[in-house]
Amino acid sequence: MATDPIEVAIVGAGITGITLALGLRARNIRVRIFERARDLHEIGAGIGFTPNAEWAMRVVDPRIHAAFKRVATPNASDWFQWVDGFHEAGTDPRETEEPLLFKIYLGERGFEGCHRAEFLGELARLLPEGTVVFQKSLETVETLEDGAQVLRFQDGSTARAHAVIGCDGIRSRMRRLLLSEDHPGASAHYSHKYAARGLIPMDRAREALGEAKVATRLMHLGPDAHALTFPVAQGSLLNVVAFVTDPRPWPHADRLTAPGRKADVAAAFAGFGPTMRTIIDLLPDPIDQWAVFDLYDHPPETYARGNLCIAGDAAHAAAPHHGAGAGCGIEDAAVLCAVLEMATQRMAAATSQEKAALTRVALETYDAIRRERAQWLVDSSRAIGNLYEWQDAQAGSDAAKCHDEAFWRSHRIWDYDIGAMMQQTATVFEARAAAVTKGSDVKE
Ligand SMILES: Cc1cc2nc3c(=O)[nH]c(=O)nc-3n(C[C@H](O)[C@H](O)[C@H](O)COP(=O)(O)OP(=O)(O)OC[C@H]3O[C@@H](n4cnc5c(N)ncnc54)[C@H](O)[C@@H]3O)c2cc1C
Image 1 (cartoon, rainbow, N blue to C red):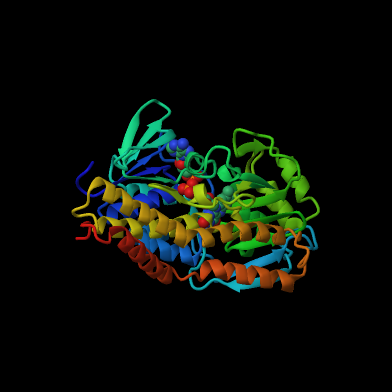
Image 2: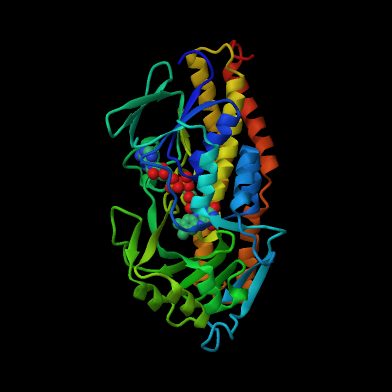
């Protein structure tokens, strides 16, 4: 391990881990992903990517962006529409319209959705065989004197790497190792909203709701519940995510998802108009319920310690109301690829200790660049979820006020200048690395 470029261990083969691995491989950095599950899997649900996420994909590896575009379903309209799902008169959704509250321009082919499993399948095809090591559930990481990291897995096996990046999701083991077990930020907390998710065959959805309501991205607002719908899988499925505020504790301590009674979800939307009631009616029973956990209450005060770091939901698990959590993980991957590439370029004649120091600087730079924006997303996601359920004390159900909030918050995510982020990454890394290597022989 003391010669050649560094090897990076990624924990977790979700969207963040796989994207990062592809980016590192494209930069000739050795990488393995250690994944707890038996195989690559994604849930049967949709996901959308905002413009910043698409830009970050291109920076990590243009093949990732091409993969997304291959499976993305264009919206029928370039406008994202927020409608009043509550005050809709009438009984037949094919003859009624949810009042338009406001709309925001997405740009041409902006914020498209896709089927998660299809996207992951496309990404997996790009990964060389053997990159992901399955059935490896991380328990601990030990740092040796020469800076090497030893990962220990539940099955008793070990692996070595120079850097370990935890992309292990909301219930991250790496976050616990990085912050310590009893740190209040070590665990995500329940936001007291859950999401009922489902995919409705498009012919059924079209027949019940009419073409206009199924062909594009719609956010249906109302009191204490709201829903997002958009087409996926080349328009063959309607993706539904229906959120419900629930003041009770999440009943399943050991898992974030569980099948639930459709009647409970229907009760939350009982006072809504015919469109929302019909959408819930079209969902299966029992229905998949996802507890919305996030890192709002106790954000990690760092994403990096020594040669360990966390990325994606492990670092900034956010409520999904902006539809931007995975995109934020891809932004992380863009920065991690850049800093690790710059670090390895300085390692030609480096000793183990010098490699370890440069790797540490790379991860500290990542933390410096990413944490503020990612934590803002966590905070804003809570705020926007409340806004969509008319729980915001200032805005209530006032369409103009809701528009103003949604507009600036959305644009702060969508319009993020990934190019400027990458430039700043290079500047910060070079300044920090110069300080580390000053007087030493590690520069090429
Ligand atoms: C209802 C809902 C809708 C959403 N919609 C969107 C959207 O439209 N757009 C968007 O950008 N985001 C969306 N998100 C957020 C997005 O799903 C997440 O941000 C993203 O999937 C996180 O990816 P990740 O790779 O960081 O983590 P995960 O996908 O959670 O992957 C973590 C991986 O780590 C593995 N793992 C865990 N522990 C260990 C261990 N100890 N050892 C080894 N492996 C381990 C897991 O098995 C898993 O494979 C939504 C989320 C929800 C809940």
